[in-house]
Length: 151
Image 1: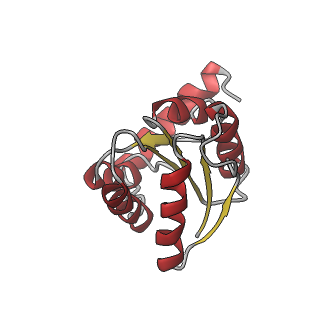
Image 2: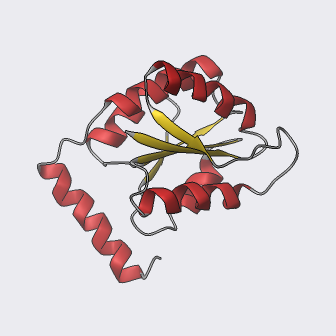
């Protein structure tokens, strides 16, 4: 599995902690920034960078962190083929993969602490899409995307 990471200034610190978990899990990853610590940046730039790499199939999944996880989820979901889920607990993270085939996880560093974020990440990377009736529903999401002209 290859994961691409991104964060704005609010998510920078948590992103750095997430890297340690990915290393422990033996998961290959790259970091598309921000690399400027807590210097203010615009979250849509990093959300798009992650989303485009996932949508292009260069990476299997992406993780994006901002203050709430909401802004980056909204921005990432504008990219065709991305199903970003903002999760604040491990159960939601697990089901976002198993039932929704979420390929991008977003989290809010001002909403959850580092320990729960690590649990969320572990649940998300370990879960696999179940297919079956869920595949039919994910396909319907893709059809909505096609009709809406999302790129």
